[in-house]
Image (cartoon, rainbow, N blue to C red; front, side, top):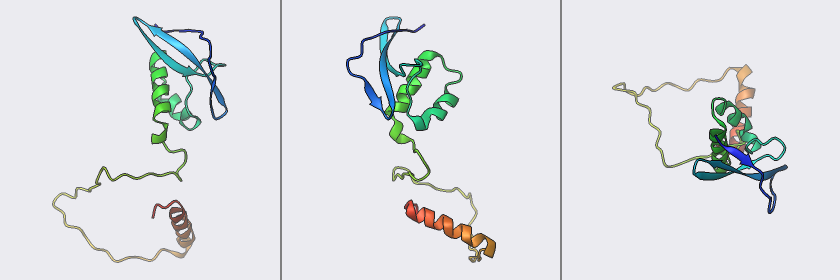
Length: 132
């Protein structure tokens, strides 16, 4: 079982508005340092990942929760804050397996009048976000 012991802060770190304190977690024969919120003693996680952290850590013990918080903090740039921050990669090529079926060609169809305004809005949004 891990135990948190108070440590002296050399220089407090600040991430956004949250100040962090370091807590030494000692296990059998080993040690690990984790960032925790000073008021609650909970592991510190970037704000946009709090919901993911809470949903993912329901069944984890305190050590595993701390490790998850550290991983989310370390790899925070792998998660988007909003849908406007989409990324891209050239490492994977997407393919659709159609089996032995041949591709089909269909003529383009006009959108109904009541859907055109929404389509124009979505196209403008995708152009602004450089999706297309």
